[in-house]
Every structure is written in structure tokens, then in C-alpha cells.
Length: 218
Image (cartoon, rainbow, N blue to C red; front, side, top):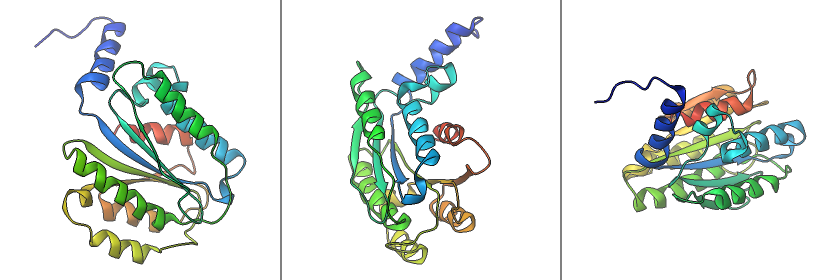
């Protein structure tokens, strides 16, 4: 037991040390809606939020919310189908190059097409199953950000059947849902409840703040 630090700098250093070296590393899969309705300002907000997590936000709060050493990050962008899967692992030392890779990936995101929410989530769970098998002790979670209703691929009923058919530890992977734009709030809240996650409403708040808030659960 140690006396409580009497300076803010020491407190911040202790928190940073905990996040980067002591806390068990997390694994987060981001299922990101890049459908046509995400164009313009919405896409700009998404890019800004993700790049802040990759280190663009240099404030104290931003640094605490940023991706940390040893953490694994997976991007699963989708429109009317999954556009690909990108994996990133933040090293313990010299993490700048990997964070730059994440930022470059974000810069390349473009909006267009339909919205296959549940097909993308099924892909996310397939990726999560592999990651959980590699390290069952890591906290693995999925973040879904969508601004519209599902209109391609599997529907909520089909996803529910898929999820109920999962076995083992992967079924415990929660989905943190960000409701944005014209998303079906009731259905997305049901999705969060089904998976043991939580829904966050970004329609009346800053998208960046919501992404940062979710980091507190990871």
C-alpha cells in the first residue's frame, strides 16, 4: 500500500503505466458501417473518432482512451457486404508505426452501398472465436457502429439463430452498439441485450465521446 500521490503528473503516470503494462490487454473488433448514408460529415466524424483512438487526441483524457500497448484491434468495415478484415497489434515499444497503420486504414475508408449489419456481425464473431481461442484470458469485445437499418444480408432473426448456436467462450463476447443517424434503436438495443453488451445513442451526442466512453468498458 502506498500513500495517494500528491501531484497530478504522478497520478497520470500511474494510470498510464497501469493501462499500458499491467492491465490485461484487450481485443476489440470494430464492425463499422460504411454504407452510402455514412458519406459526408458522418464519415468525417467516424474517421476523427477512430484516429483519436489511434493517438491523434493528445489530451490526458484522449491518451487514456487511446489504443494501448499489447492491445489487438480489428477493423471489419461493411456496406452491403463485409469489405475486408484488418488486424492490428499495438507493440509494447515503438507503437507509433502501428498506430500510423491504423490511421492510414481509417483515411482510406469510403462510404457507399447498402447496410449488412448482421452479416458483418457474424463475420466479427468468427474472427472473435479465433482470437478467444488464442488467448481465453483476454477481454474480447465487438463494437458495432451503424447509422441505418439493415437492408442486406442476414436479418436480426437470422443473427439471433446464429448467435444462439455459438458455443464456448465466444458466446460471452459482448457487442457494444453505437446507434447513429437513422439506426433502428429498438432493434439495436435488443442486439446489445442479446449479447450481454450495451447500446450507446450517438444521435444526440458527439460520436467521438461515445467511442471514448466505450473504451471504459474494455
